Length: 115
Image (cartoon, rainbow, N blue to C red; front, side, top):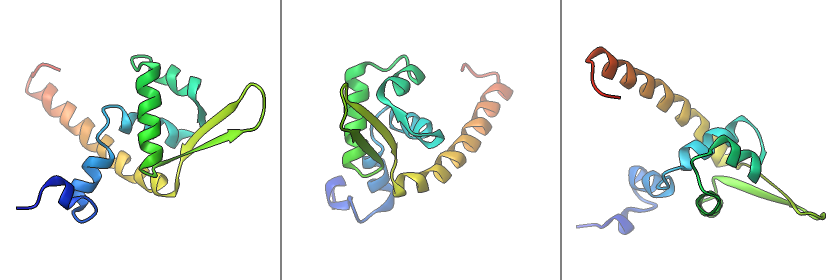
Protein backbone atom coordinates (compact mmCIF):
# COMPACT_ATOMS: atom_id res chain seq x y z
CA UNK A 1 0.00 0.00 0.00
CA UNK A 2 1.37 3.41 -0.99
CA UNK A 3 1.84 6.06 1.68
CA UNK A 4 1.18 9.78 1.32
CA UNK A 5 4.89 10.37 0.64
CA UNK A 6 4.82 7.73 -2.11
CA UNK A 7 1.87 9.49 -3.76
CA UNK A 8 3.35 13.01 -3.67
CA UNK A 9 4.12 14.04 -7.23
CA UNK A 10 2.03 11.16 -8.59
CA UNK A 11 -1.50 11.70 -7.29
CA UNK A 12 -2.94 15.17 -7.97
CA UNK A 13 -5.03 15.19 -4.77
CA UNK A 14 -2.19 14.13 -2.49
CA UNK A 15 0.17 16.59 -4.16
CA UNK A 16 -2.30 19.50 -3.87
CA UNK A 17 -3.12 18.64 -0.26
CA UNK A 18 0.55 18.58 0.71
CA UNK A 19 1.40 21.82 -1.12
CA UNK A 20 -1.60 23.64 0.40
CA UNK A 21 -1.37 22.08 3.85
CA UNK A 22 -0.85 25.31 5.79
CA UNK A 23 -3.92 26.63 7.59
CA UNK A 24 -3.47 30.08 6.05
CA UNK A 25 -2.06 29.15 2.64
CA UNK A 26 -5.26 29.64 0.65
CA UNK A 27 -5.99 33.03 2.22
CA UNK A 28 -2.43 34.18 1.55
CA UNK A 29 -2.73 33.02 -2.06
CA UNK A 30 -6.08 34.79 -2.36
CA UNK A 31 -4.63 38.12 -1.18
CA UNK A 32 -1.53 37.80 -3.35
CA UNK A 33 -3.85 37.00 -6.24
CA UNK A 34 -5.27 40.49 -5.88
CA UNK A 35 -1.87 42.23 -6.12
CA UNK A 36 1.79 42.08 -5.17
CA UNK A 37 2.17 42.84 -1.46
CA UNK A 38 4.78 43.50 1.15
CA UNK A 39 4.91 41.55 4.41
CA UNK A 40 3.22 44.28 6.45
CA UNK A 41 0.39 44.60 3.94
CA UNK A 42 -0.28 40.88 4.13
CA UNK A 43 -0.18 40.98 7.91
CA UNK A 44 -2.80 43.76 7.94
CA UNK A 45 -5.04 41.66 5.67
CA UNK A 46 -4.72 38.69 8.06
CA UNK A 47 -4.74 40.21 11.57
CA UNK A 48 -5.30 36.85 13.32
CA UNK A 49 -2.07 35.52 11.85
CA UNK A 50 1.08 35.96 13.93
CA UNK A 51 4.25 37.33 12.36
CA UNK A 52 6.09 34.04 12.82
CA UNK A 53 3.26 32.00 11.29
CA UNK A 54 3.02 34.35 8.31
CA UNK A 55 6.78 34.08 7.81
CA UNK A 56 6.60 30.28 7.96
CA UNK A 57 3.65 30.07 5.58
CA UNK A 58 5.32 32.44 3.09
CA UNK A 59 8.52 30.38 3.15
CA UNK A 60 6.58 27.17 2.58
CA UNK A 61 4.59 28.67 -0.30
CA UNK A 62 7.82 29.97 -1.82
CA UNK A 63 9.54 26.57 -1.40
CA UNK A 64 6.53 24.93 -3.07
CA UNK A 65 6.81 27.35 -5.98
CA UNK A 66 3.43 29.04 -5.54
CA UNK A 67 4.76 32.49 -4.69
CA UNK A 68 7.83 34.53 -5.50
CA UNK A 69 9.77 36.79 -3.18
CA UNK A 70 11.56 39.80 -4.63
CA UNK A 71 14.17 41.56 -2.50
CA UNK A 72 15.14 45.11 -3.40
CA UNK A 73 18.72 46.10 -2.52
CA UNK A 74 18.01 49.17 -0.43
CA UNK A 75 18.05 50.32 3.16
CA UNK A 76 15.77 49.46 4.83
CA UNK A 77 15.27 46.25 2.84
CA UNK A 78 12.13 46.05 0.74
CA UNK A 79 10.61 42.64 0.05
CA UNK A 80 7.56 41.99 -2.12
CA UNK A 81 5.55 38.81 -2.52
CA UNK A 82 3.59 37.83 -5.61
CA UNK A 83 2.14 34.73 -7.20
CA UNK A 84 4.42 32.64 -9.39
CA UNK A 85 3.19 31.39 -12.76
CA UNK A 86 1.79 28.21 -11.20
CA UNK A 87 0.35 30.30 -8.35
CA UNK A 88 -1.50 32.46 -10.87
CA UNK A 89 -3.09 29.30 -12.29
CA UNK A 90 -4.36 28.51 -8.79
CA UNK A 91 -6.56 31.65 -8.90
CA UNK A 92 -9.08 29.63 -10.95
CA UNK A 93 -9.21 27.01 -8.20
CA UNK A 94 -9.75 29.72 -5.56
CA UNK A 95 -12.60 31.18 -7.60
CA UNK A 96 -14.29 27.77 -7.78
CA UNK A 97 -13.73 27.23 -4.04
CA UNK A 98 -15.42 30.58 -3.37
CA UNK A 99 -18.46 29.49 -5.39
CA UNK A 100 -18.66 26.17 -3.57
CA UNK A 101 -18.03 27.81 -0.19
CA UNK A 102 -20.87 30.29 -0.73
CA UNK A 103 -23.20 27.46 -1.75
CA UNK A 104 -22.23 25.52 1.35
CA UNK A 105 -22.83 28.55 3.58
CA UNK A 106 -26.27 28.95 1.99
CA UNK A 107 -27.00 25.27 2.66
CA UNK A 108 -26.04 25.71 6.31
CA UNK A 109 -28.29 28.76 6.63
CA UNK A 110 -31.17 27.03 4.85
CA UNK A 111 -30.94 24.15 7.31
CA UNK A 112 -30.57 26.55 10.25
CA UNK A 113 -27.26 24.95 11.16
CA UNK A 114 -24.76 26.70 13.39
CA UNK A 115 -22.23 28.77 11.48
